[in-house]
Image (cartoon, rainbow, N blue to C red):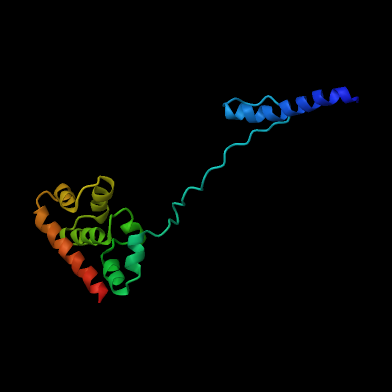
Length: 155
């Protein structure tokens, strides 16, 4: 090859190597031979539904043996602390919902669905699920019981 072909060969190589990058930046597929486009990698794997990360409420309750025993006795059969507390705003709201479920015979899963999925307050959930109950008094009573449970766990 003679010296006069060198600039032409260099220019051709540069064009062929830059074409895929230019095409990718402008949303077009590359026509360069040998260029293989890779699918974008997902940022992270989706969380497993079988073994979700512990939520803060369950972690705090489990760290206090006396409170954990009290709460465990109020959980619906077959439901773990992790499952039951998922989605509640705080320990007090969760424990008050357990008390309402036990006091009024409202299925905890229905109460949780109202509070977590529909974003109703405890009183609104009682009104929705037990219209004959005095919702304000029952919510106040359950909140007082939850506060008492939490205070006892600090001792």
